[in-house]
Image 1 (tube, rainbow, N blue to C red):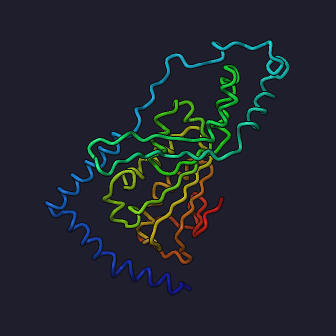
Image 2 (tube, helix red, strand yellow; image 1 turned 135 degrees about the vertical axis):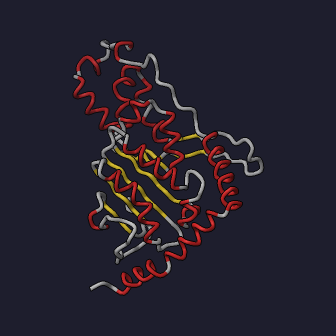
Image 3 (cartoon, rainbow, N blue to C red; image 1 turned 90 degrees about the vertical axis):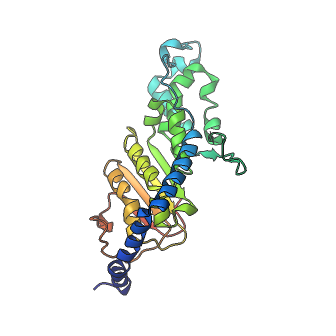
Length: 289
């Protein structure tokens, strides 16, 4: 038997949702309103794109083993075979969560020209101390920083910046990613559908399309926080749609949301059964470590 909560959600979908959608569509069709909205979105999207770093060009002569001294005088390279050195690198450089920090020196008093976004990650700098001590170690060990750790992004902007800054081979070698997605502009479905980057539907969809292209990715986790909750079922369906597509590609995927929903009604906005999502869904606070 369906719960009272589930029945009330179904009634709300039938009675309340059509007028809300009608009013939204009608507002968007208003010529002056639509013109202002498009202008506002265009300006903000251009500002956001202008602050992203330039895409790193593919190195014509990347550092490789053939250009590095063999260091045969070192007992480490002379006595230890490559397989054993790889185990040492994996143990010494792996098993951590590398939390990237987005540096946003936004000047609210002057919106005409804003400084570019910057990234910082103290953990990576600490781990790279060993590879930087020797060119051959750098050639052999740097990959383990990206293949044996979880790269944690505070938002979509940090992900886009990181993707542009690191070499493509390095980016596609990443096996584990953790994204946090939380912002006041995502609290309402209309702000999400008609909002500005990186908190709008366009960026959300494009982000998951890029995630699906990551060749080495084996684990993906996203923490989604929307205030206030509960989240409208139609909004959740829209948010989850690209996640469902990604979950069918990535080997293991975890989705953590801050809103509770013990009795998920039969939403008319998705063909997916919440119990059969291609990812593990965890609801409520606190988010797991």
